Image (cartoon, rainbow over all chains, first blue to last red; front, side, top):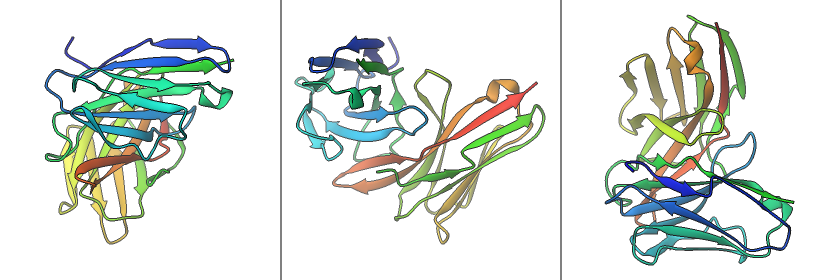
Amino acid sequence: GAGVSQTPSNKVTEKGKYVELRCDPISGHTALYWYRQSLGQGPEFLIYFQGTGAADDSGLPNDRFFAVRPEGSVSTLKIQRTERGDSAVYLCASSLTGGTGTGELFFGEGSRLTVL
Amino acid sequence: SQQGEEDPQALSIQEGENATMNCSYKTSINNLQWYRQNSGRGLVHLILIRSNEREKHSGRLRVTLDTSKKSSSLLITASRAADTASYFCATVMFSGGYNKLIFGAGTRLAVHP
């Protein structure tokens, strides 16, 4: 498709389980961002990829969170030992470039994670 | 952390009225962007204003930026029921070699027919 695609759209899991959320950015976009959005709040920055490398992971809340982008396109956000506080909508966004241009982001529809 | 602070948090108006949302931020920026989010959906970019610009228009949208006060406003004129959504400002800083966008908490706009 032409837009940013995220799967699954909804994920319900139990506390302590492992979860993977996938993002397929717009073709040709080298910059990829993950954000987390809690109910009634704005998106909170998690991690930024330029190509295959995580250029800024300062927003990851702790070491249970990890993200990869092995071929510079699809990215996976991985959450280990999930906790109820991890429940949120995880948004992925891509941009043509991260270091030049204006930084306009194109967002996916998000993956809603619910930890019971 | 969220740099931008929007106010009001919620705004309820009638169709045809204008809606004004404000955003304040703390640090120097390259540009400031406004995004819209319909309930349960992703964010959609609306308009961008650079740090050396003071005002910008796009259709029914007007954005102003006052870098001395570190504030911006988004005006939607002649609102429609379809404008009902949450609106977020995002400050853009060139940090660590890339454009880092930090979002505010948003304004929830309800436009009643």
